[in-house]
Image: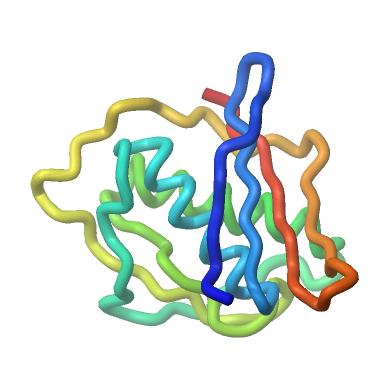
Length: 136
């Protein structure tokens, strides 16, 4: 099952849901979703380089999800690069990063990934679902 994402109905912000066979697949789907929210499409999907992702080791997985997506938003908007893939788990992994193409023009600003109801859960069929809310 390929990783997929969708935008969920939300009152004022943008709620994204991603799912996949592994945690990294669900997270990767959300990373694509964030790009689509900002640019109207996925503008980068293949990593050009790898970096170590080493967040707070004591944080809960759903909070690590918020931290990683927050880092992705920061990089998209301030550094003109995209976090496109997670290799490993949220507590200790590598992230694949790509520079944005010159023609990638933002359509919307994301202020933050909120701590309101992040979700990271294993479904009964063994797949993973991840959800975050973007403050736009």
